[in-house]
Length: 420
Image (cartoon, rainbow, N blue to C red):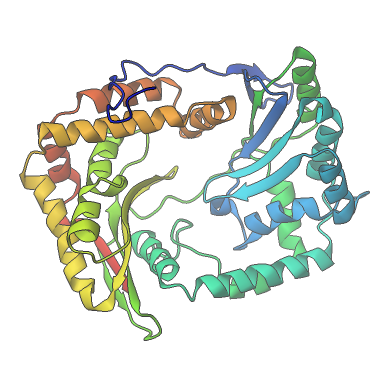
Protein backbone atom coordinates (compact mmCIF):
# COMPACT_ATOMS: atom_id res chain seq x y z
CA UNK A 1 0.00 0.00 0.00
CA UNK A 2 1.32 3.47 -0.83
CA UNK A 3 2.05 5.76 2.09
CA UNK A 4 -0.57 8.52 1.75
CA UNK A 5 1.36 10.78 4.11
CA UNK A 6 4.12 11.17 1.52
CA UNK A 7 3.18 13.48 -1.37
CA UNK A 8 4.20 12.51 -4.91
CA UNK A 9 7.43 13.96 -6.19
CA UNK A 10 7.15 17.35 -7.82
CA UNK A 11 8.26 17.49 -11.43
CA UNK A 12 8.90 20.77 -13.20
CA UNK A 13 7.23 21.27 -16.57
CA UNK A 14 10.07 21.31 -19.09
CA UNK A 15 8.17 22.02 -22.28
CA UNK A 16 4.68 22.48 -23.71
CA UNK A 17 4.08 20.81 -27.02
CA UNK A 18 0.87 19.83 -28.78
CA UNK A 19 -0.10 19.15 -32.40
CA UNK A 20 -0.92 21.92 -34.85
CA UNK A 21 -4.00 21.66 -37.08
CA UNK A 22 -3.61 21.07 -40.81
CA UNK A 23 -4.68 23.96 -43.02
CA UNK A 24 -6.96 23.45 -46.03
CA UNK A 25 -8.50 26.06 -48.32
CA UNK A 26 -12.00 25.41 -49.65
CA UNK A 27 -13.08 26.35 -53.16
CA UNK A 28 -15.04 29.33 -51.75
CA UNK A 29 -11.87 30.68 -50.13
CA UNK A 30 -12.75 29.68 -46.57
CA UNK A 31 -9.83 28.24 -44.57
CA UNK A 32 -10.45 24.95 -42.79
CA UNK A 33 -8.26 23.74 -39.93
CA UNK A 34 -8.21 20.02 -39.17
CA UNK A 35 -7.05 18.27 -36.01
CA UNK A 36 -7.45 14.55 -36.62
CA UNK A 37 -6.83 12.84 -33.29
CA UNK A 38 -8.68 11.21 -30.41
CA UNK A 39 -9.85 7.72 -29.53
CA UNK A 40 -13.62 8.28 -29.64
CA UNK A 41 -15.68 8.43 -32.87
CA UNK A 42 -16.78 12.02 -32.33
CA UNK A 43 -16.44 14.98 -34.68
CA UNK A 44 -16.77 18.61 -33.76
CA UNK A 45 -17.11 21.36 -36.34
CA UNK A 46 -17.04 25.06 -35.52
CA UNK A 47 -17.65 27.84 -38.00
CA UNK A 48 -16.44 31.18 -36.70
CA UNK A 49 -17.34 34.38 -38.51
CA UNK A 50 -16.21 37.93 -37.86
CA UNK A 51 -19.82 39.02 -37.41
CA UNK A 52 -20.34 39.60 -33.71
CA UNK A 53 -22.39 42.38 -32.18
CA UNK A 54 -19.78 44.99 -33.20
CA UNK A 55 -20.94 44.67 -36.79
CA UNK A 56 -24.71 44.76 -36.40
CA UNK A 57 -26.79 47.56 -37.88
CA UNK A 58 -29.52 47.34 -35.22
CA UNK A 59 -28.68 46.45 -31.59
CA UNK A 60 -29.55 42.80 -31.07
CA UNK A 61 -29.45 41.81 -34.73
CA UNK A 62 -26.38 39.59 -34.28
CA UNK A 63 -27.83 37.77 -31.27
CA UNK A 64 -31.29 37.21 -32.71
CA UNK A 65 -30.06 36.21 -36.17
CA UNK A 66 -27.86 33.49 -34.70
CA UNK A 67 -30.46 32.33 -32.18
CA UNK A 68 -33.16 32.15 -34.86
CA UNK A 69 -31.17 29.91 -37.19
CA UNK A 70 -32.52 26.84 -35.37
CA UNK A 71 -36.11 28.12 -35.44
CA UNK A 72 -36.91 26.98 -38.95
CA UNK A 73 -35.89 26.72 -42.60
CA UNK A 74 -37.86 26.93 -45.83
CA UNK A 75 -38.77 23.23 -45.51
CA UNK A 76 -38.42 22.45 -41.79
CA UNK A 77 -40.03 23.80 -38.62
CA UNK A 78 -38.19 24.26 -35.35
CA UNK A 79 -39.77 21.00 -34.15
CA UNK A 80 -38.45 19.17 -37.23
CA UNK A 81 -34.95 20.51 -36.60
CA UNK A 82 -35.04 19.56 -32.91
CA UNK A 83 -36.31 16.06 -33.75
CA UNK A 84 -33.47 15.40 -36.22
CA UNK A 85 -30.84 16.66 -33.79
CA UNK A 86 -32.25 14.53 -30.95
CA UNK A 87 -32.62 11.45 -33.17
CA UNK A 88 -28.92 11.43 -34.01
CA UNK A 89 -27.78 12.47 -30.53
CA UNK A 90 -26.06 15.53 -32.00
CA UNK A 91 -25.83 19.16 -30.94
CA UNK A 92 -25.97 22.31 -33.04
CA UNK A 93 -25.52 25.62 -31.29
CA UNK A 94 -24.73 29.28 -31.80
CA UNK A 95 -22.83 31.84 -29.74
CA UNK A 96 -22.46 35.57 -30.38
CA UNK A 97 -19.71 37.67 -28.80
CA UNK A 98 -18.54 41.22 -29.42
CA UNK A 99 -16.24 40.32 -32.34
CA UNK A 100 -17.28 36.83 -33.46
CA UNK A 101 -20.25 34.59 -34.15
CA UNK A 102 -19.72 30.85 -33.67
CA UNK A 103 -21.89 28.10 -35.12
CA UNK A 104 -20.98 24.67 -33.77
CA UNK A 105 -21.84 21.06 -34.50
CA UNK A 106 -20.97 17.93 -32.52
CA UNK A 107 -21.92 14.45 -33.65
CA UNK A 108 -20.94 10.82 -33.71
CA UNK A 109 -18.81 10.18 -36.78
CA UNK A 110 -21.30 7.65 -38.18
CA UNK A 111 -24.05 10.29 -38.20
CA UNK A 112 -21.98 13.03 -39.81
CA UNK A 113 -23.76 13.11 -43.19
CA UNK A 114 -27.39 13.69 -42.07
CA UNK A 115 -26.39 16.14 -39.34
CA UNK A 116 -24.13 18.04 -41.75
CA UNK A 117 -26.94 18.20 -44.29
CA UNK A 118 -29.18 19.73 -41.62
CA UNK A 119 -26.54 22.30 -40.65
CA UNK A 120 -26.06 23.41 -44.26
CA UNK A 121 -29.83 23.71 -44.75
CA UNK A 122 -30.07 25.83 -41.59
CA UNK A 123 -27.30 28.11 -42.80
CA UNK A 124 -28.56 28.48 -46.36
CA UNK A 125 -32.34 28.61 -45.98
CA UNK A 126 -33.15 30.00 -42.52
CA UNK A 127 -36.69 31.39 -42.51
CA UNK A 128 -36.86 33.46 -39.27
CA UNK A 129 -40.54 32.76 -38.47
CA UNK A 130 -42.35 35.71 -36.89
CA UNK A 131 -43.95 33.63 -34.11
CA UNK A 132 -40.59 32.26 -32.96
CA UNK A 133 -39.08 35.73 -33.04
CA UNK A 134 -41.83 37.07 -30.76
CA UNK A 135 -41.25 34.25 -28.27
CA UNK A 136 -37.50 34.71 -28.34
CA UNK A 137 -37.84 38.46 -27.84
CA UNK A 138 -39.99 37.86 -24.77
CA UNK A 139 -37.47 35.42 -23.32
CA UNK A 140 -34.55 37.77 -23.98
CA UNK A 141 -36.35 40.79 -22.53
CA UNK A 142 -37.10 38.84 -19.35
CA UNK A 143 -33.45 37.72 -19.13
CA UNK A 144 -32.27 41.34 -19.42
CA UNK A 145 -34.74 42.47 -16.77
CA UNK A 146 -33.52 39.75 -14.41
CA UNK A 147 -29.87 40.63 -15.06
CA UNK A 148 -30.55 44.29 -14.38
CA UNK A 149 -31.71 43.36 -10.88
CA UNK A 150 -28.30 41.86 -10.05
CA UNK A 151 -25.88 44.52 -8.95
CA UNK A 152 -22.78 42.59 -10.10
CA UNK A 153 -24.08 42.49 -13.66
CA UNK A 154 -25.18 46.12 -13.58
CA UNK A 155 -21.73 47.08 -12.29
CA UNK A 156 -19.91 45.19 -15.05
CA UNK A 157 -22.08 46.70 -17.77
CA UNK A 158 -21.54 50.18 -16.37
CA UNK A 159 -17.81 49.53 -16.15
CA UNK A 160 -17.57 48.59 -19.85
CA UNK A 161 -19.59 51.67 -20.78
CA UNK A 162 -17.28 53.85 -18.73
CA UNK A 163 -14.20 52.37 -20.45
CA UNK A 164 -15.41 52.54 -24.05
CA UNK A 165 -18.42 54.93 -24.03
CA UNK A 166 -21.97 53.89 -24.85
CA UNK A 167 -21.40 54.82 -28.50
CA UNK A 168 -18.75 52.12 -29.03
CA UNK A 169 -19.79 48.48 -29.57
CA UNK A 170 -17.59 47.33 -26.67
CA UNK A 171 -19.38 49.68 -24.30
CA UNK A 172 -22.89 49.11 -25.60
CA UNK A 173 -25.25 46.56 -24.05
CA UNK A 174 -28.55 45.17 -25.23
CA UNK A 175 -31.57 46.77 -23.55
CA UNK A 176 -35.24 45.85 -23.30
CA UNK A 177 -35.96 48.74 -25.69
CA UNK A 178 -33.49 47.32 -28.22
CA UNK A 179 -35.21 43.94 -28.02
CA UNK A 180 -38.62 45.49 -28.52
CA UNK A 181 -37.39 47.32 -31.62
CA UNK A 182 -35.84 44.35 -33.42
CA UNK A 183 -37.69 43.29 -36.57
CA UNK A 184 -37.44 40.41 -39.03
CA UNK A 185 -36.02 42.82 -41.59
CA UNK A 186 -33.06 43.48 -39.26
CA UNK A 187 -32.40 39.74 -39.05
CA UNK A 188 -32.63 39.28 -42.82
CA UNK A 189 -30.18 42.13 -43.39
CA UNK A 190 -27.70 40.70 -40.88
CA UNK A 191 -28.14 37.20 -42.34
CA UNK A 192 -27.59 38.28 -45.92
CA UNK A 193 -24.97 41.00 -45.49
CA UNK A 194 -23.06 40.32 -42.27
CA UNK A 195 -23.37 36.83 -40.78
CA UNK A 196 -20.92 34.94 -43.02
CA UNK A 197 -18.15 37.55 -43.03
CA UNK A 198 -14.54 36.37 -42.89
CA UNK A 199 -15.38 32.80 -41.91
CA UNK A 200 -13.06 30.00 -40.83
CA UNK A 201 -13.88 26.33 -40.17
CA UNK A 202 -12.34 24.21 -37.40
CA UNK A 203 -12.74 20.42 -37.43
CA UNK A 204 -11.48 18.17 -34.65
CA UNK A 205 -11.89 14.60 -33.46
CA UNK A 206 -11.94 11.28 -35.29
CA UNK A 207 -11.97 12.56 -38.88
CA UNK A 208 -11.42 10.05 -41.65
CA UNK A 209 -10.43 11.18 -45.18
CA UNK A 210 -13.99 10.44 -46.31
CA UNK A 211 -15.44 12.51 -43.46
CA UNK A 212 -13.13 15.40 -44.28
CA UNK A 213 -14.14 15.30 -47.93
CA UNK A 214 -17.81 15.28 -46.92
CA UNK A 215 -17.30 18.33 -44.68
CA UNK A 216 -15.46 20.19 -47.42
CA UNK A 217 -18.19 19.53 -49.97
CA UNK A 218 -20.85 20.78 -47.56
CA UNK A 219 -19.05 23.94 -46.48
CA UNK A 220 -18.20 24.86 -50.07
CA UNK A 221 -21.89 25.56 -50.55
CA UNK A 222 -21.56 28.62 -48.31
CA UNK A 223 -20.82 32.03 -49.80
CA UNK A 224 -18.62 34.04 -47.42
CA UNK A 225 -19.25 37.77 -47.47
CA UNK A 226 -16.58 40.44 -47.55
CA UNK A 227 -14.75 41.56 -44.43
CA UNK A 228 -16.59 44.20 -42.45
CA UNK A 229 -15.10 47.19 -40.69
CA UNK A 230 -16.09 48.65 -37.35
CA UNK A 231 -15.27 52.18 -36.29
CA UNK A 232 -12.18 52.58 -34.13
CA UNK A 233 -12.84 53.29 -30.49
CA UNK A 234 -11.84 56.64 -28.98
CA UNK A 235 -8.12 56.75 -28.21
CA UNK A 236 -8.59 57.90 -24.65
CA UNK A 237 -11.44 58.36 -22.21
CA UNK A 238 -11.14 60.06 -18.82
CA UNK A 239 -11.20 57.61 -15.92
CA UNK A 240 -14.43 57.54 -13.98
CA UNK A 241 -15.51 56.74 -10.46
CA UNK A 242 -19.16 55.69 -10.56
CA UNK A 243 -21.24 55.01 -7.43
CA UNK A 244 -24.79 53.82 -8.13
CA UNK A 245 -27.13 53.45 -5.16
CA UNK A 246 -30.61 51.94 -5.45
CA UNK A 247 -31.11 50.85 -1.83
CA UNK A 248 -32.30 47.35 -2.78
CA UNK A 249 -29.15 45.34 -2.10
CA UNK A 250 -27.34 44.25 1.04
CA UNK A 251 -24.06 43.94 -0.84
CA UNK A 252 -22.00 46.23 -3.02
CA UNK A 253 -20.70 45.05 -6.38
CA UNK A 254 -17.28 46.49 -7.18
CA UNK A 255 -15.54 46.58 -10.56
CA UNK A 256 -12.16 48.29 -10.81
CA UNK A 257 -10.09 48.20 -13.96
CA UNK A 258 -8.65 49.91 -17.00
CA UNK A 259 -7.90 49.53 -20.68
CA UNK A 260 -4.89 47.36 -21.19
CA UNK A 261 -3.43 45.29 -24.03
CA UNK A 262 -4.48 43.23 -27.02
CA UNK A 263 -2.95 39.79 -27.54
CA UNK A 264 -0.51 40.88 -30.22
CA UNK A 265 1.27 43.36 -27.98
CA UNK A 266 4.59 42.08 -26.60
CA UNK A 267 3.76 42.80 -22.97
CA UNK A 268 0.44 40.93 -23.04
CA UNK A 269 1.84 37.57 -21.89
CA UNK A 270 4.07 39.01 -19.15
CA UNK A 271 1.03 40.93 -17.89
CA UNK A 272 -0.86 37.62 -17.67
CA UNK A 273 1.62 36.66 -14.96
CA UNK A 274 1.15 40.00 -13.18
CA UNK A 275 -2.63 39.64 -13.34
CA UNK A 276 -2.52 36.07 -12.04
CA UNK A 277 -0.37 37.14 -9.11
CA UNK A 278 -2.72 40.04 -8.33
CA UNK A 279 -6.08 38.26 -8.55
CA UNK A 280 -6.09 35.58 -11.23
CA UNK A 281 -6.18 32.43 -9.08
CA UNK A 282 -7.21 31.23 -5.63
CA UNK A 283 -3.78 31.88 -4.12
CA UNK A 284 -3.59 35.44 -5.44
CA UNK A 285 -2.76 38.47 -3.33
CA UNK A 286 -6.28 39.87 -3.51
CA UNK A 287 -7.78 36.56 -2.39
CA UNK A 288 -5.36 36.23 0.50
CA UNK A 289 -5.89 39.78 1.68
CA UNK A 290 -9.58 40.46 1.10
CA UNK A 291 -10.99 36.95 1.54
CA UNK A 292 -8.58 35.11 3.81
CA UNK A 293 -7.24 37.90 6.02
CA UNK A 294 -10.10 40.44 6.09
CA UNK A 295 -13.07 38.15 5.45
CA UNK A 296 -14.75 40.82 3.34
CA UNK A 297 -15.85 38.53 0.50
CA UNK A 298 -16.27 34.95 -0.64
CA UNK A 299 -14.26 35.68 -3.75
CA UNK A 300 -12.43 38.38 -5.65
CA UNK A 301 -11.04 37.95 -9.12
CA UNK A 302 -8.87 39.86 -11.58
CA UNK A 303 -9.06 39.05 -15.28
CA UNK A 304 -7.55 40.25 -18.54
CA UNK A 305 -10.03 40.42 -21.40
CA UNK A 306 -8.60 40.51 -24.93
CA UNK A 307 -10.95 41.70 -27.68
CA UNK A 308 -9.84 42.37 -31.26
CA UNK A 309 -9.59 46.15 -30.99
CA UNK A 310 -8.89 46.55 -27.30
CA UNK A 311 -8.11 44.77 -24.08
CA UNK A 312 -8.87 45.56 -20.48
CA UNK A 313 -8.25 44.44 -16.92
CA UNK A 314 -11.17 44.03 -14.53
CA UNK A 315 -11.12 43.32 -10.79
CA UNK A 316 -14.54 42.16 -9.59
CA UNK A 317 -16.01 41.31 -6.19
CA UNK A 318 -19.09 41.66 -3.98
CA UNK A 319 -18.86 42.74 -0.35
CA UNK A 320 -21.08 43.93 2.48
CA UNK A 321 -21.92 47.60 2.07
CA UNK A 322 -20.22 48.62 5.31
CA UNK A 323 -16.81 47.38 4.05
CA UNK A 324 -17.07 48.76 0.52
CA UNK A 325 -14.55 51.57 0.92
CA UNK A 326 -12.20 49.42 2.97
CA UNK A 327 -12.22 46.80 0.20
CA UNK A 328 -11.46 49.39 -2.48
CA UNK A 329 -8.57 50.71 -0.39
CA UNK A 330 -7.14 47.20 0.00
CA UNK A 331 -7.36 46.57 -3.76
CA UNK A 332 -5.35 49.70 -4.47
CA UNK A 333 -2.95 48.81 -1.65
CA UNK A 334 -2.15 45.44 -3.29
CA UNK A 335 -1.55 47.14 -6.63
CA UNK A 336 0.82 49.61 -4.98
CA UNK A 337 2.73 46.78 -3.33
CA UNK A 338 3.26 45.21 -6.76
CA UNK A 339 4.61 48.55 -7.99
CA UNK A 340 7.06 49.13 -5.15
CA UNK A 341 8.16 45.72 -3.87
CA UNK A 342 9.68 42.76 -5.67
CA UNK A 343 7.74 39.55 -5.20
CA UNK A 344 9.64 36.79 -3.35
CA UNK A 345 11.02 34.09 -5.64
CA UNK A 346 9.01 31.34 -3.93
CA UNK A 347 5.72 33.21 -4.42
CA UNK A 348 6.53 33.86 -8.08
CA UNK A 349 7.41 30.21 -8.58
CA UNK A 350 4.00 29.22 -7.20
CA UNK A 351 2.33 31.44 -9.79
CA UNK A 352 4.48 29.99 -12.58
CA UNK A 353 3.64 26.44 -11.51
CA UNK A 354 -0.05 27.29 -11.42
CA UNK A 355 -0.07 28.91 -14.87
CA UNK A 356 1.85 26.11 -16.58
CA UNK A 357 0.02 23.32 -14.76
CA UNK A 358 -3.36 24.85 -15.47
CA UNK A 359 -2.43 25.26 -19.13
CA UNK A 360 -1.68 21.53 -19.41
CA UNK A 361 -5.17 20.72 -18.13
CA UNK A 362 -6.63 22.74 -21.02
CA UNK A 363 -4.97 20.73 -23.81
CA UNK A 364 -5.93 17.18 -22.83
CA UNK A 365 -8.16 16.31 -25.81
CA UNK A 366 -8.45 17.31 -29.48
CA UNK A 367 -11.39 19.63 -28.88
CA UNK A 368 -9.59 21.54 -26.14
CA UNK A 369 -6.46 21.79 -28.28
CA UNK A 370 -8.51 23.25 -31.11
CA UNK A 371 -9.97 25.81 -28.69
CA UNK A 372 -6.44 26.92 -27.82
CA UNK A 373 -5.54 27.18 -31.49
CA UNK A 374 -8.62 29.32 -32.13
CA UNK A 375 -7.79 31.63 -29.23
CA UNK A 376 -4.52 32.51 -30.96
CA UNK A 377 -5.62 32.30 -34.60
CA UNK A 378 -8.60 34.62 -34.24
CA UNK A 379 -6.27 37.34 -32.95
CA UNK A 380 -3.88 37.00 -35.89
CA UNK A 381 -1.41 34.76 -34.06
CA UNK A 382 -0.19 31.21 -34.64
CA UNK A 383 0.59 28.32 -32.33
CA UNK A 384 4.06 29.69 -31.57
CA UNK A 385 2.13 32.06 -29.28
CA UNK A 386 2.00 29.24 -26.72
CA UNK A 387 5.71 28.51 -26.97
CA UNK A 388 6.25 32.18 -26.24
CA UNK A 389 3.82 31.93 -23.33
CA UNK A 390 5.77 29.00 -21.86
CA UNK A 391 9.11 30.77 -22.27
CA UNK A 392 7.94 34.07 -20.79
CA UNK A 393 6.19 32.46 -17.82
CA UNK A 394 9.25 30.37 -16.97
CA UNK A 395 11.75 33.20 -17.23
CA UNK A 396 9.96 36.28 -15.92
CA UNK A 397 11.69 37.81 -12.91
CA UNK A 398 10.51 39.67 -9.80
CA UNK A 399 12.08 42.86 -11.17
CA UNK A 400 10.14 42.52 -14.44
CA UNK A 401 6.93 42.00 -12.46
CA UNK A 402 7.53 45.23 -10.56
CA UNK A 403 8.42 47.17 -13.72
CA UNK A 404 5.29 45.96 -15.51
CA UNK A 405 3.10 46.97 -12.57
CA UNK A 406 4.67 50.42 -12.60
CA UNK A 407 4.21 50.73 -16.37
CA UNK A 408 0.60 49.57 -16.67
CA UNK A 409 -1.07 49.76 -13.26
CA UNK A 410 -0.79 53.42 -12.33
CA UNK A 411 -3.63 54.07 -9.88
CA UNK A 412 -4.80 57.25 -11.62
CA UNK A 413 -5.60 55.23 -14.76
CA UNK A 414 -8.22 53.00 -13.12
CA UNK A 415 -11.96 53.26 -13.60
CA UNK A 416 -14.02 52.35 -10.55
CA UNK A 417 -17.69 51.31 -10.44
CA UNK A 418 -19.68 50.50 -7.31
CA UNK A 419 -23.33 49.42 -7.34
CA UNK A 420 -25.14 49.07 -4.02
